Image 1: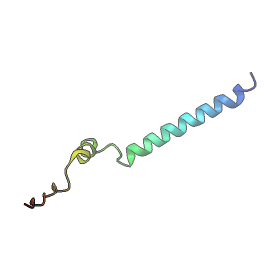
Image 2 (image 1 turned 90 degrees about the vertical axis):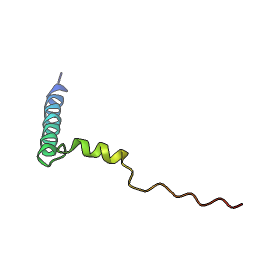
Image 3 (image 1 turned 45 degrees about the vertical axis):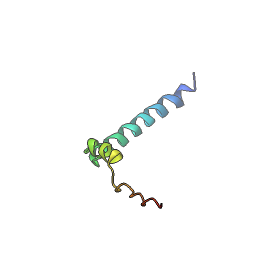
Image 4 (image 1 turned 60 degrees about the vertical axis):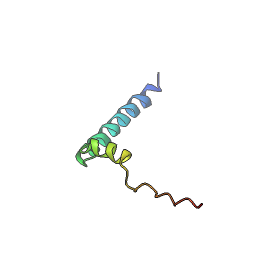
Amino acid sequence: MEILVFLVPLALMLGLAGLAAFLWSLRSGQYDDLDGAAWRAIADDEPPPQDAPAKR
């Protein structure tokens, strides 16, 4: 039962740290452009390679 004296405050501190990190990420703009990252992942930035003419 004595372990609860340490675990309850530890759990509260970890929960508050997670909440603080989430609120910081909201304020810093981490969730502003959700579609941009998805399009950048599938966008073709490089032109397709040109095949060399076949030698006969």
